[in-house]
Every structure is written in C-alpha cells, then in structure tokens.
Length: 444
Image 1 (spheres, one colour):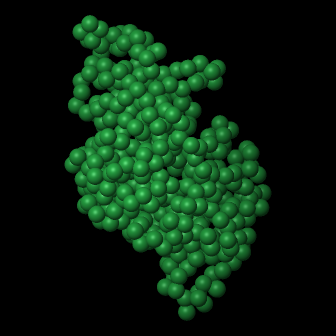
Image 2: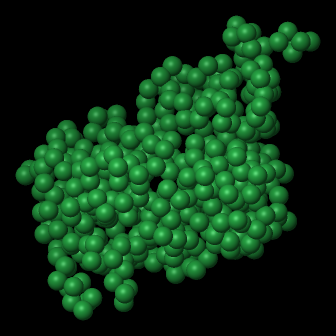
Image 3: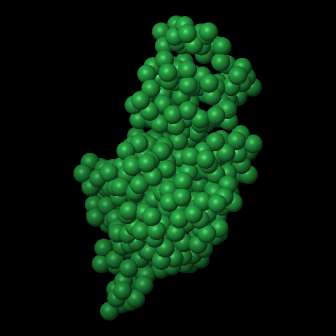
C-alpha cells in the first residue's frame, strides 16, 4: 500500500515544480542538502515565473535559479546563514540575509513566515513510509507542516539518521516525489589549521575537563581543537551541538566521546545539521549514537544548559573593549550570520560549570594589505552586534585568554588589551582613556 502511494506520487522534477507560482515563498534546502534537480527544473521555468522568494542557506555551490537570473526579477534568495557564494549575490542585490535567533527557526516558520512550497532533499523511504531528512534537520518539519505543497527529492546517497524528533517526514505529508538517484553530497574540505588556530586552541584545551559537553562552530580553530582533544587524555566527553563536523568524528574515533555524563541524550550525540567530508557523512549513516533534532531543541539555551559543564566554542570578526562582538558583518557588508552563537553563548553562560569561548585572531589585513586589530576600542561603524557585552565569558586570541564574566568596564578594557596584538596595545590604551574606561593605575 505504501509503495503504491510512493509510485503514485513519483513525478519528474519538471512536473513537480509546476506547483510553484509567481510570488510564492519556497523553503528550499540548506547546506549539504540542496535539491539540485528541482533547482535545474525551476530555472527552466524562469520566464514564466516572477518574484518567487526562495528561502535557504549556506550555499556550498551555485544554484541554477540564481545563475540564470542575474537581475533577481524571477527569483530572490533569502538566506538563514550566508556563505561565500551568497555574499557575492548579496553584493549584487539578489540575496538577502534573515536575521535570526537560530533556536527560533521552527517557530518563525510556524508563527511568523509564509511558506507556500517546501522543496527539500531526503533519504530513500523506508518500509514504514518515512523519509529521513538526513544531514539537515533544522526547521524542515515546521516547513512541511506549513506548506500547501511538499516536494521531496530523493538522494540515494543521503544518510538515514536516527533522532531525536522531527527528523523525518512521512509519505502522507508529501505531495510529489522526485527520484534523484545517487546525487552525492557536497563536501566541505577545510584547510589545515593555521599556527594561530593552533595557538588559540592550545589556550582553550586546559579549560576542558573530563565529562564536558561540547558545541563547536566551523573553521580552522575548532578543527585544531578537535585534533588536540583526540590526542589528549580527556575522557567521557559529550556532544550537544548545532553543527556536526569532522572534528567530532575524530574525537569519537579516538575514544574521547561517550556522552555518559550528559544530563540530556545520555550516550548520544545531539545535532541539527551536518557539513563536512565523506568521512562525516559515512559516520552518520544509520548510526544509533546520533540524535537529530530541530533547532528549537538543540539551540534553545534552556535545553542546552541542562547539560553540566557545557562548552561553547565560536568565532568572531571583531570585539570592542566593552565586550560586544560581531560575527556577521564587516561594517555594513554582510559576511555570514548570527547562526547559533548567541544561543550557545547563553547556554554555556548559565550551564553549571559551563564555559563559552569567543575566538578570534588578534589581527587581519584589509583590502590595502594593512594589518588591523580585531580588538577595537569601539565596534566598526555599521557592524552588527551579534552578542551583547553581558553575555560573554572567555575571549581568546593567540596571545591568551581572558574571562570577562562579571568584570567592570575598566577591567574588561585591561583584559582585552592584554590579549591584543602587542603592536596595537598602546593605541588601544589611548582610546580606552578617551572612553574613560582606562584607570591611571593601569599604566603604573
């Protein structure tokens, strides 16, 4: 009976996308789960569609709907979180960021946003009629609930994952099925950690204790820390994260992760989406140690903080002497997004024994090749504040780490200047004095 329903709902990609109308809002994939056959079919309909508002994020490769429509008259991209390709589109005015609390994505979809069509990639259906959302769970269940039409593109290479909840969709909720064969999954191969990454990771490692529960962001520094943990004497670590990355697999394979000291999902790895190499995707396939959840579970501070000794590790673009951080924009130009940073900073802040770390190299080079400090007296004009100053705990550069929790304004300035690049410390002291947050005794 289920397989008869499956056959009845099977159509070509071109037939499936006919359900999309001009003016529609379409929830359309995320990161490694992008329905590329539907993308190509929708691009072929370009001339008959106008103002179709697509919603997704972390594009790891160009989309046909955006490449065929350079003026953005037919399709406009609305991103939950921007990557390099989306930044290019934003500069052209055909992609726009959605400012979010990541923990709220499902609620946004259910309570605040229009969703006419949901078009996503899934794993093959099982004998019970369920398709797994695979490497991207997030807010998909909410998008399926809200849409007037649901299209699933079946990828034979999409791993079936364990949950959790809201990690799959039943055929009764699906209107059209497009078989995509072995479509593969895009891989994200990160460069080897830099020396600065390794130095920052080395400052964090002593703060980690046996039984700690982790959230890691993506990038060279988390990768470096994962390697160090895999080679350390730490044991019984747990994982409760938004993003599942290769670094966690290294920790598991080294025997460092058991999850047996977690208060939630004991013995299991909780996450909401994954992005990395084939090694990661193979690790996820039918792995009962995983628990896939929507963002309203993984990212909600009230959930994550229930794990004692919760460790949150994220990066930032800049920080000012009051402790405000920006990880989203460079001035007024969009760079990425808030992601789950604020969610997990707060969770670690309130967790019993918890610690949050904001990591950034002390300097960067601007377009003219000039070296600039990432620790600034005040945030660059136009830059967005991602986490406010009362939320922060540890800030780490290659020059050390400081804990800002509970510190007064002059103590914060003193602490942050102490981990700035030495070439900029005197300048920062002078700026702090002008802002009246530098005590004379500091100069003695």
